[in-house]
Length: 113
Image (cartoon, rainbow, N blue to C red; front, side, top):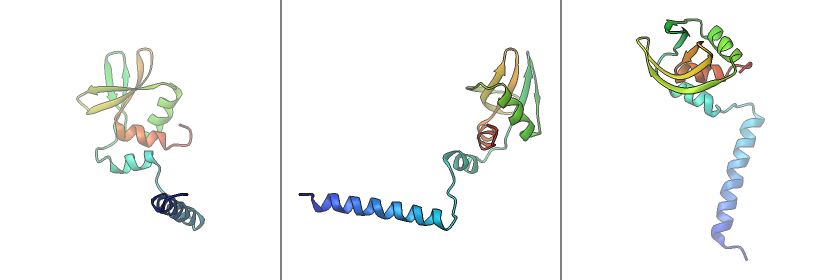
């Protein structure tokens, strides 16, 4: 026989599932983990282009995301530059794009990422 504690857990779980299904039915969209991280991050998005030893801030974030995605390999890389803190490096040899977490999470939300 199943104990009352187990039945209570099952009932609560089914209640939560029914609430989520109802919200989906009426069209409410819940943020994904990436969107939540993006919204909670309070720093400004930063994209930096680097060629060899030279770095330049890149202000067009959409273009930066597109170009970084073309490189197809982004790895975590903690760097402090004069432009700001960098968390991700998308590179192809000596050239590439450096992104902070805010910019990287924005890029991950794009349809081409």
